Length: 392
Image (tube, rainbow, N blue to C red; front, side, top):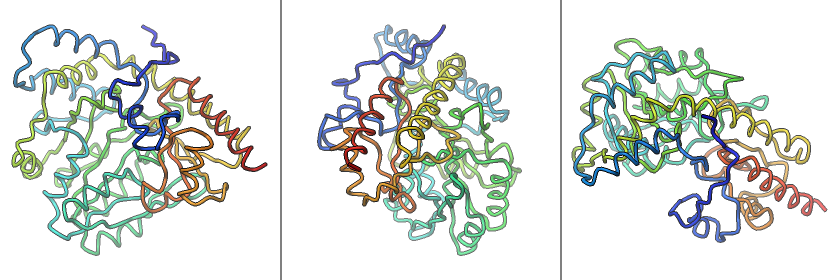
């Protein structure tokens, strides 16, 4: 069944962070929200039907993960990514961000280093700092309109005693889909220095099919490699509010260490609805996802073309994956404070400030493509008018 991604769905007053938190985040509700990473599209019909069917049963008790749920994850990643997962490797957990905290606690001691590659998703920083670990930055390098890893510097960071690498793959916010050779180089460094890798692959399914394909890091590993992979249906099927994700680790000792923080806090990852949504998405959401990727590709091309024609002061770094665009606004000559104020007060568009993503984010803004093209056009028209007024 064809999905109408052009449909504008009213989300105000539904408790949606993206909309109902605008006053708290931007100081006004009068902005088009293109910030937090959830999409304005309806979830796959199969997911909605599974939730409705479960809701019809009037008892919502403590819930087990059925074998069929685990099988849906295994089948999805085998069929979509060529990655063979064994049942015992899977751990259901309440989100990727809690998993970052758990990995920090499990694999690094107080004050020990965890490597990140900024500019990067802000919880990478907070998971390290809030657990008393030390942030070690291996900044990405912007070259020729796209980002690359600084592998020589990563090697030095690893040699200097860091314990863990948090790898964002595909990368949020810069949109890189790491090539196989890049990932193999990372694995080589980690093997030489005994680094444990937590690979956040939550955007693995959201790669533009006309440009790249995603390589699951675990598909390149050997038996002795120290690797944990985090995946989730939340971005893939637009169900982030369900709060359920999956950790995959082949090493039993890694699984035990990762689950210990969750067990200490008695954090239950499951409710009857999150389990139903996850299984339905992975079982029946493939055709919906294929249509979504085609629409997001069109949105990407629309925004890039609009900026090239009307706003040449702004440029988009290579957009290979995720539904997030990393926009270089440095030519506007504003400080980060001025840039955020300009987007909110003059353009009336709510984006994520690049400075919030740490080193290398200054002068950039992150735009969420996951909305109807009409909304994107309105936001760009407002931005174009604001820039024209500023430049006189």
